[in-house]
Image 1 (cartoon, rainbow, N blue to C red):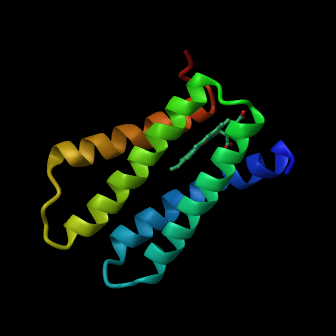
Image 2 (image 1 turned 180 degrees about the vertical axis):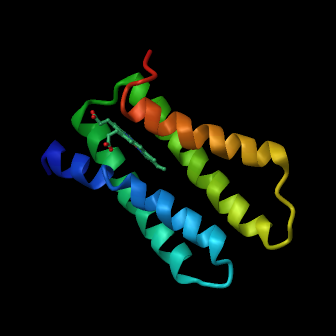
Image 3 (image 1 turned 90 degrees about the horizontal axis):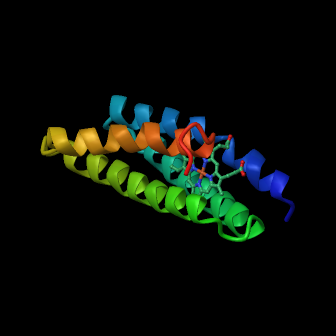
Length: 111
Ligand code: HEM
């Protein structure tokens, strides 16, 4: 598949953010979580597709790994929040990754 298709898919990352906020705001609703998980898949498939097309540059490998940690943190927060057991450090890590991963995607942060 051409790179551009994966990039267009990847540009929908804002929807992932929206469904995360909705999942937090509507804890008794299941659909925001279902759609959120669908968008994890969209991001992972398109991200890996671009990684292959770009021939695995180290910078984007690191960005991809951080994105996987971000997805893990989102899932952890959604699971623990019902028990009220999310620590400030866990929230902090999630928020930092939520800023860092898109900034790396747009190469505002680059190495
Ligand atoms: C929560 C998940 C993710 C978020 C929020 C995210 C965010 C972004 C953003 C904002 C960009 C800039 C381009 C755009 O989409 O407009 C980008 C680019 C990129 N992302 Fe992600 N990403 C995520 C997951 C991943 C994963 C899992 C991988 C790889 C395994 C990956 C690989 C890439 C690559 C290779 C680019 C570079 C595209 C280019 O050359 O312009 N991303 N990402």
